[in-house]
Image (tube, rainbow, N blue to C red; front, side):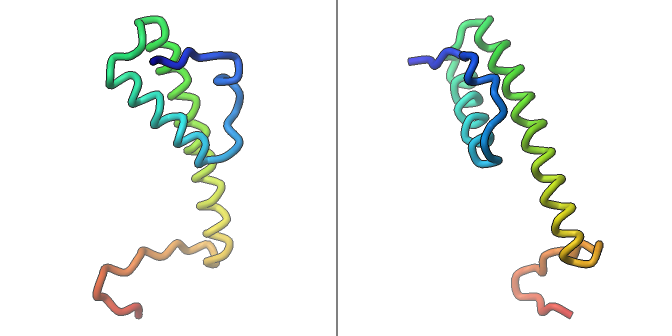
Length: 84
């Protein structure tokens, strides 16, 4: 059962999580060969839009974290490492 892309699918996602879920669904459909050629091209285009949306959301969050951390991102400590 393949889901056709509709006008709703071209709308901006409500959240990062929604975009990731839609992207995962598109990838699964394309990998399974469930879409005809034209729908595959449309799915690829939609996937590109979703990736851009997610990248922008991640950049916004990174900026917020930089502000909270005093403009200095800190790497996560490896398991077993003590923070200095």
